[in-house]
Length: 190
Image 1: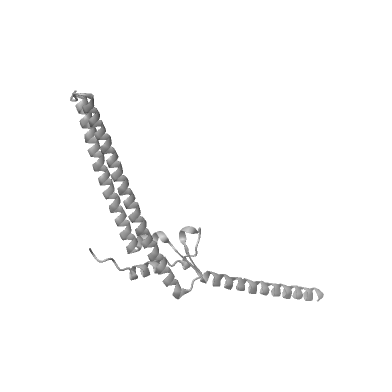
Image 2: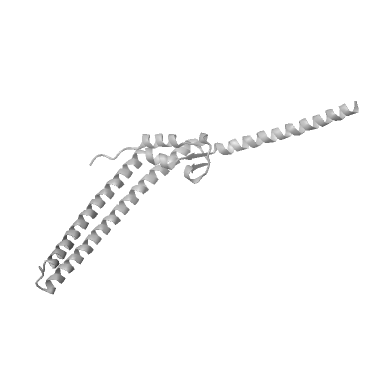
């Protein structure tokens, strides 16, 4: 009988400890859920791949780079033709004087410098324009997220790229894309 009474007491103590532990776990789970409730994340690569403004800026950048590559190829061909002409003239004894040869070489060097200056100026222009467009894109995203969060009151919106794991239930990427595209107004055609 005594053994049974001791066993019952041990069992009661074990139940009390288990109930306390479960209660504490529930409180921790609730606190974790509340904390997670204020945090969301978005995948910036997916946003930029699907946001109309980002797509337009990307296409614009590709066109600018293609135009630059065409200009670079054109300048290279001009210089190569001039260099080949000088070489052919030199090999066929077409130069009657050293001064004539030096004048053509100086012209060749001048054309190389001019081409380098034109290409450098074009690169700077492209860099400046794309930096301005990237700023427009970043401002658009920042303004949208500020307005978006004004109604949702999240404590933080994180970038998926900055973490290792996020609960997929916290992903707001598609909402953000839909909202950005809904409020985007394409510029009037010029």
